Length: 383
Image (cartoon, rainbow, N blue to C red):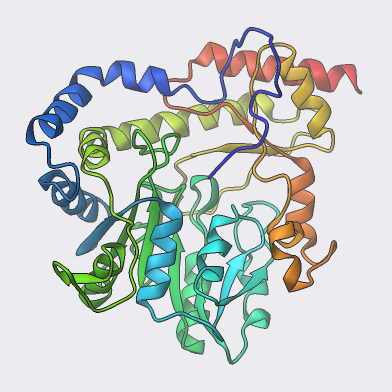
């Protein structure tokens, strides 16, 4: 999922980057080099053994029976929906506050996207608003575990079961997050992950994964991701070329054992942010669901002076991001849905006020302190 304006085109020397991928790769250089060299030696770049090895390891990590590696997070969602038989005439419920890829996956299959507004504290789909969006054509609900925080799955799953709907989890930002002891991705009929490089578990390019307990769904997803092929040159479906590259699988396999440590560091950084920013100006900190493990892919705060704050920070070497400046319902791509401003007021308010602060495992305490000091200076100057 992309970020908006992380550097604001500034030439000021960066004191605190928004993300520092080089720091992670320096620490793992030897392990990654071994993994890459093995792929280069084998020269089995498509569907090599490392893909299956990583699929099995990731399935075990999430606590499910099956995992299917695919080309990216959008394709994971699209293929999972296709494996569920979603197509024209069907409706798929998506949070109003998410990256557009969640909606695009349904649109690509000819299904109609139905949006539900979000909770102002957690930024995730508001279960209290879910049921009124369900119609006789609704087939699937896609809760998004945004920023690394689980969506409130208990009421979502209850409503879905009662109304005969499937729940497909978008866990693109939630590698290792848990909801009441259950890993994100393991609670619905399937879960979809992205391995975009800046994610908690990132490849050296695009990558994705579908995880499920349903063997039939896994087989169908694997077939659809490989040209609709079961036996070579025998195509029973109109599939895609959407496989996970061997090279990415090998790198992800090398990184996976470090994921829990990285997530703990992210949580520690978030706690320091919370302590340092509490009570500063009009900064509003994100809420956290009880009994849940938040893995802080992002650390978002809200302020009514978001854009001015971002300029102030950038001028002092602190990079920030916005997730996401224009909600799905106001995107030109969805003009055909006739949504208008005011239809999803919480998502619109978040889009105008949220700023994502630097967050990555290697972030140092002094960098967090500097970010918080600069925010305090801005708030004090404007008070």
